[in-house]
Each structure stands twice: as structure tokens, then as C-alpha cells.
Length: 137
Image 1: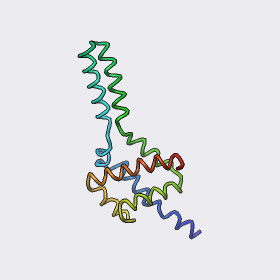
Image 2: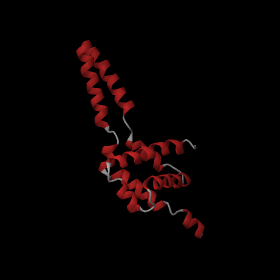
Image 3: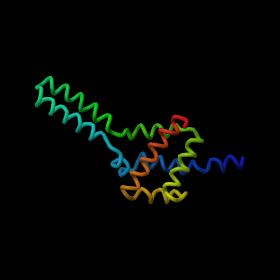
Image 4: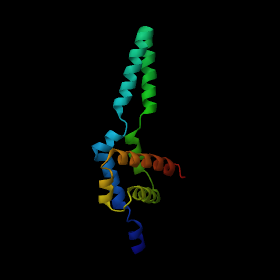
């Protein structure tokens, strides 16, 4: 029983990490959002309309929307993938985050996301870890 309790010690850290991802507006700003998708769609529509009239605007809008979709990061999807990890995968994720942060406390994690560069490195680590872990690598 004690080994099981010690084995689940990563859960509060993981829960805090997920809470930060869901509620921290700075992390949302760091991840590319829907605004860039809309901007690509609008730019494609305008360019297509100038070049090819109404039909060109339609084609440009579709192409711009597709480019915007491909270039954007799906922040909500990242959260969903991380929530669906097994306990072993969550423990591995916590280990990787703690190594990046340079500490094992929740306070260290909260301090770590204080700068743009550190938020970006955390999101990069989470994306790559989610991709690896969800594939079973």
C-alpha cells in the first residue's frame, strides 16, 4: 500500500500542471491561437479576390484557411492528449517537466512559467512528450 501511495506522488504535480495549462492566460498567449487561423483565411480571401474576383476570393479563402489550420498549434488538443495519458505516461511527463524546470516543487513550476522563453520551452516539451507518449514511444 505504501509503495502505491509513493508511486502516485506525481499526481499533485501533474494536476497543477494541467490546471496551469487550462487557466494561465500567458500560456494561452504563448500557444498560437485562432486569431492566426482567421488572419490567414482573411488574407487568402483578399488576395484571391484581388486576383480572381469572387471565385478567386472563395479559392483564396479556402487555401488561406487551410494554411492557417496547418500553421496553428492546437492548444486545446494538447490538453486533451495530456489528460488521456496513462498513469505511467503521466509520471514520465512529470519527470521530464521537473527536469526542464530544475525542481520538483509546484512552486518551482509556477515560477518557471514567469518568462516567455520558459513558457515556450515548456510548451515545446509538452507537445513533443505528448506526441511521443501518446504513440507509445
